Structures are given as structure tokens and as C-alpha cells.
Image (spheres, rainbow, N blue to C red):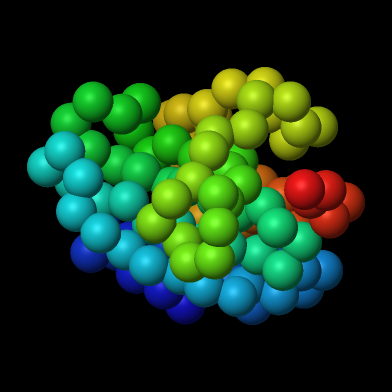
Length: 107
């Protein structure tokens, strides 16, 4: 289980459909951002900082190899926006599983 913002938050072992290929946590706007890249080409940006709606998740894709350069994706069955006010670990992991179930990104 990974920690986020000092709290255990993500059980990435629940994401069984797509392999997590890279993950980083970094400071953002007085809080934290966790980026997870999945083998299907999608990923998740999870933030909790001064300007966020509590814990937020966005579906992302990546511009190139690595994890720090990405684009928000607004046209998936998971969401058409950023998902804010995530209440608990089960809800967050549920979104990660949905992202893992998306078809592979076509470039």
C-alpha cells in the first residue's frame, strides 16, 4: 500500500487488469500529487492540495516515456472531468480499477 499525503491511500495491487509501470509522488501547491502510469497507456493523477477539491483524481495519458509529462483526458467512460471530493480508499481504488480496464491508448 502506498502512502499519499502522509496517509496510506492506494492499494495498487487491486489494479489487476493493467500493470502499474511507474509511480511517483511529488509536492504540488502546498500538498501532494501522485502519478501512476499503467501498462494500457493511461494513468492517474491524484492530488490533494490547497486548490483541489479534497482528494482529486484525473485520468491522464503520457506524452513520452517517463511519467512527469502528461495530459488530462476528458473523454473516457471513467469521467469527463476531474473527480473531486474522493471520500476513502475504496472509492479511489475503484476509479483506478476503472482506468486499468480502459482499452489500450492508441497513439
